[in-house]
Amino acid sequence: MSYELIAILMFSTMMVMLATGQRVFGAIGFVAVIAALLLWGDRGGYDLGFAAAMKLMKWYPLLTLPMFIFMGYVLSESKIADDLYRMFHVWTGGMAGGLAMGTIGLMVLVSAMNGLSVAGMAIGATIALPELLKRNYDKRMVTGVIQAGSSLGILVPPSVVLVLYAMIARQPVGQLWLAGVFPGLMMAGLFVFYIWLRCRITPKLGPILPKADRDVARAEKYRLLRAGLLPLFIFAVMIFPFVNGWTSLVESSAIGALAAFLAAVVRRRMTRQVFENSLRNTLRISCMFMWIILAALAFGAVFDGLGAVRAIENLFTERMGLSPWTILILMQLSFILMGTFLDDTAMLVIVAPLYVPLVDALGFNLIWYGVLYTITTQIAYMTPPFGYNLFLMRAMAPPEVTLGDIYRSIIPFVGVMIVALSLVISFPEIALWLPGHVYAN
Image 1: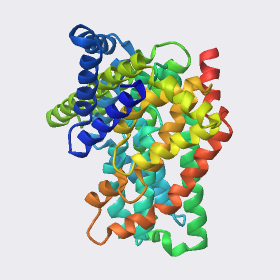
Image 2: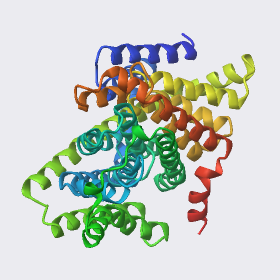
Image 3: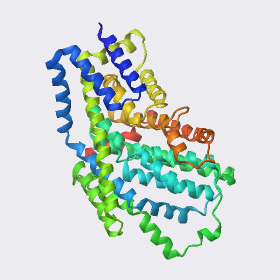
């Protein structure tokens, strides 16, 4: 049997297992181990799995994963995120669409707290959505805002997905996080601009709050500003020493986790239940990602041994005569297709063993490609008919928001994200300038 046929058989077996509802790490790890045993026998197969496990355990930057997840859950469980929305409610309610624009700001800060899009979706749907609907905002507008804003969680640092990509692609986590800063802020800015323009043309989509709701004493407004910006201060305390080279990435993550814990203690919100929930969720999410990384490493090792990447590169470039840019665009389209039925981590571990070496062989920058993958995943999250975020929103939205409303709400925001993706593809320095500048110094 040829290596190309073996690679196709591995992919098809894995997809069949996923279609039957198996866990992502279970399907990928099972296919990797069975393929290794069949190809290289007992000794080679067992060595491959053991080597993947040892590589994972020795990867020092992986310590950042539980630190950042713990930081995010402490800030979320202690309701510090609620203060954020109250701040935006008071400070932006006087503009048409102001609360929707404030919700995007909330999502950016939640992303800087947690690094997971699901957390942003949960906070947006439980805190922002009821308030926006109560203030007569258009239901399609607000569901689109929350879905689009929550997707920033996998791009704005500390993105957990970029940690996973860094492990699989063997790239520095710090550079990937810095590469996501400007694209993430640019996308958030484009969302805000779209909301402002749309509400300026059609004010009823995002009405100005009544004066009674905005009539808050100046002292109270500044108190809310201080409380709402606390997560941003924690992020600055964590990231400033790292950017200036005073601490390593792991040390900075520990500073962030400690700062979040102390902030909850000072605000008298660090109860036994908050602490226990934060630890349990941190352990659950961290273990899930470690199993996924372990399975992806084993799967990638089999592909490296088969030489499948070189075979596929020759198929695209020599036999089919495709240019590197055409291949890159086809890769991004495949992510959008897979995003209709898979989440971001599943997509990454399924195709990364093939795509990452191929991107490197075609001469593209792997840090830049990590940002492209993440933006494309954001788009895939919200692409009908089975986009991951669409069904999360449906599960959390009130009954008056139908699935048809959710589908239609996301169309303009997907268009904005495609514009952002096109800009990063056309101008790679949007992603590469900051990590290049920081690491050069």
